Image 1 (tube, one colour):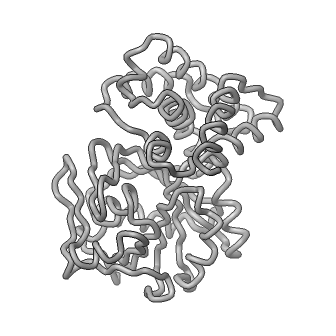
Image 2: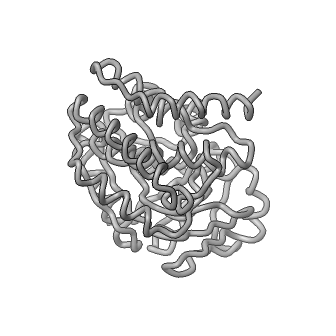
Length: 309
């Protein structure tokens, strides 16, 4: 079988890491860059990982400033923050050919359905990244821990294409789990993201600082319980024992600056629509109240206005 062509949209902490993995797995990977374009073109992409160095030299990397200059792709990996989702239709459309699979490596709920409608796609994939990875400089990514992907499909006819991508990622050294329902997978990821992204941003603290305080641990647990109730009401039940597992894993995790905390510290708009607003709206539609989650969201809205005004 001919090796697939991958397009990475958003070469940051997530796209840069998984794109470099696929490159080293022998796949044809093309990277879209914005502010880092000239640096990466001249110096390459550097990934410092506790699994080993996955850098790509300047003479090997295929870097672009526009998707119109990129080849049509078999797989489009989208690793932009959801605050930029209004750009996705215009960015992705030039890359599509019959059978292309779009895979959203993003957090939150609702993005797959919206983009499938915009691009008139029969199916679209979503991916949840269980990874501690930060961009620490131009073309420079620091991968601290983890790296597992959970993939799912929106539109059952796309399952064979998703299985092929999962195989490519596994061949490239990425641990991959495939779930039939992307919504089930997204609710499980929200179980961690809703408390820890929000609390870290509001408290201006990393995960170890949150876990060192009994009261914030209790608050994180209460928010997780609210997410569980909302997920169950929408037909995506979560095993309650996963709460304890996530709390224990976070306590053991290396001190981690969440993406939302980094956005706040760097004066960037935080991802509130898909991770909080959509979740609260869906819960309300099912008659589920999430008071602690809503209070956290309201505080994040205040902080976001200070950044965006």
